[in-house]
Image (cartoon, rainbow, N blue to C red; front, side, top):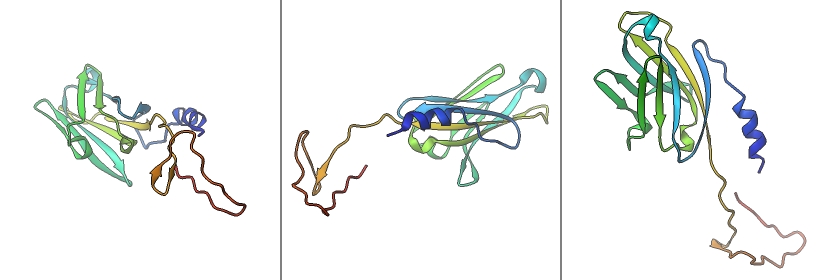
Length: 163
């Protein structure tokens, strides 16, 4: 399996978004990952609320809401509670745990400030990786033990291997 060259190619690729800060984040399935969000309290004032969305089939769906009195994971992050949000000065991060293959995709963080309009979009492209598992071979639905022999096979016989 040629995962390493593909991984190296993907890590350096950042998709083009319409506006806002862009970041690519890579995480391992089963571990946690933090998606960054730019917050500019010094220039824009206090945060009113922050909305995280995920691009699902070209539709941006809300996945996390934050304000001073509400922190609410939504969609696949809500059951079980798989997300935390951290806001400190000009850094905000959405932590997703444990990471699942289905978490891969494009995320958007939209910050709304109390004082009004200020550029507020950050984008993250999340790439999920999984450790390879040991191969297993089955014959007629039953697993074969290591070192087992399949056959004999004749020329023209079909042997199917499924990954």
